[in-house]
Amino acid sequence: MLEEPSEPGWLSEEVTTGTTIIAIEFDGGVVLGSDSRVSAGETVVNRVMNKLSLLHDKIYCALSGSAADAQTIAEMVNYQLDVHSIEVGEDPQVRSAASLVKNISYKYKEELSAHLIVAGWDKRGGGQVYVTLNGLLSRQPFAVGGSGSAYVYGFVDAEYRKAMSKEDCQQFVVNTLSLAMSRDGSSGGVAYLVTIDEKGAEEKCILGNELPTFYDQ
Image (cartoon, rainbow, N blue to C red; front, side, top):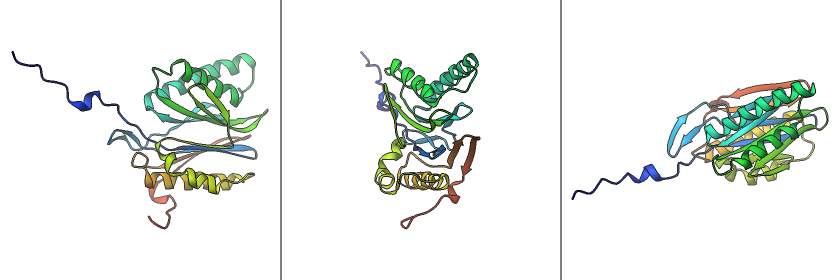
């Protein structure tokens, strides 16, 4: 009897993804940043995806992991925050958004593969950054994530300082992204930035040829 042809090995292999995301607090707000490359294994499937997703007027999240899973979580939280803000008659707190992300991530931890950093500003807590992963909820002065983060932990630990100004935080985020994108093959494209404070959110896109370069580039 003829044997049935076996499936190619790549069909059963886990598809690896990659990205670099970062968020940092300053006195009066936060700055979030991400690269724009979406990869599946060795294939780049999108060069210019904005991984900074709006959850509410002054709350954003940075996406990593499976792009589809992360976007699904962000859309679910965005809807729930809109309903919540209508019910209470005021803008939601950043911690409330982060708690929603945490609960969804933990409830569907077997089905979804995503890690979101939630950051924003509210009148009670000011600028805040939260890390959410598998039921974890932790406020941090800054946070990095994605495959590119492994290349820049030493840099952010050495360069971070307390009470940095808004401009210093923006440059800190740009430098971190530039370094990660130059080292990590799964990170690249352009750099997206969002600065959030009491006045609202300001989005910015920095092209790859406008990113800072370092001595070995």
